[in-house]
Amino acid sequence: MRAYNVTIERSQDAIGWVGLLSIPSIGCITPPPFGTQCTLPRELALEACLRTRACTAITCPSQEPYERGQRAKKIAGPICQLRSRADTSNAEKRHGMCRPSGCVNVLMHPVQVDPAWRRTVAEAGASHRSVLLFVTASSPGLIPPLLSPSGSSRSRFVRVFGTPPASNTQVFVVDNIGRKERADASR
Image 1 (tube, helix red, strand yellow):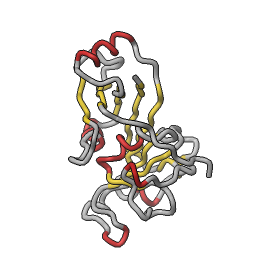
Image 2 (image 1 turned 135 degrees about the vertical axis):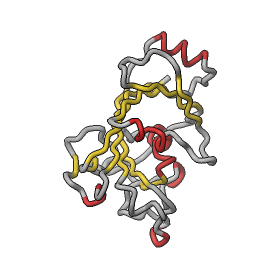
Image 3 (image 1 turned 90 degrees about the horizontal axis):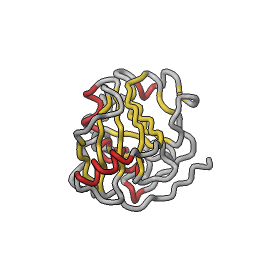
Image 4 (image 1 turned 30 degrees about the vertical axis):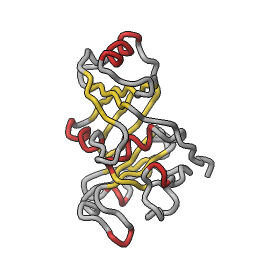
């Protein structure tokens, strides 16, 4: 079972793109509306990142320009972009896509799973392919849009009621992730 500490925060800075190419099989919009990077509907972003070997972060631009979609770019609503670096060393300071209300950045760091959490997850009926997420958000309202997969999603997100590692952390199990996709992160 994989596990991640997930930090979700709103910022005027975007997480920079470093070679994680668009993969249509995980839901990336085709053709890519912004260069060759993976842009996808917000509700698919977390699951897609968990299914992509090189993905360790997600950046979601300020949603106002996308709420009603942009037909010419095949964007039907709120979007996010997958990233291959879960740190702010490559942040794109005050990026235009973060205006007016800020980007939502999701940083994912792998962690070891405590045996007690493995038991809790097993008791919740999750499969061996489940992923455990310890989610901390700068605002609780940032979590639901990312944990609401569309009807076409194969995964399910289940809130686990246990004692989280920190008082401001929520714990989720993502069940049925499936196999990981390869992505070229060399560019």
